[in-house]
Image 1 (cartoon, helix red, strand yellow):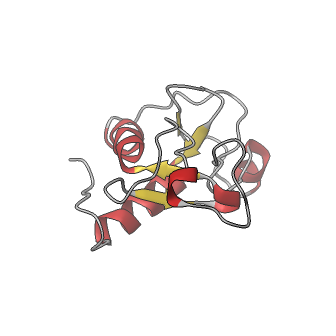
Image 2 (image 1 turned 90 degrees about the vertical axis):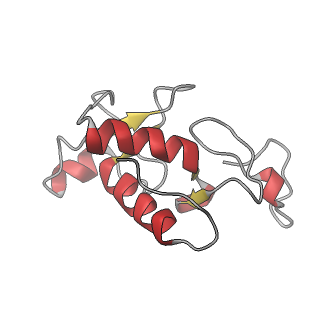
Length: 121
């Protein structure tokens, strides 16, 4: 997600926001980017991981599209993942990250030497 008015030809780190909490990306804020500039910050990823992966919660609405991978409910159904859980943004419950993206993003951040981010336990 980008701040309103961002120059798409000259995007700065501070122009990039987490799709889930609208936190600004900084050097000390871990962030994973998905398709079309969508992002999830380390804090939201920790909350999503804890909720979906550890607590097995599914608070996603009946129909939704993950902004990171762009898969909609129909796409997941075609792939045999119709009941895949998701974690909705605390600011906008229509913005939901899928379990597959939670797993991929947490794996990437966990392995990154740029940030001291670890998967919740």
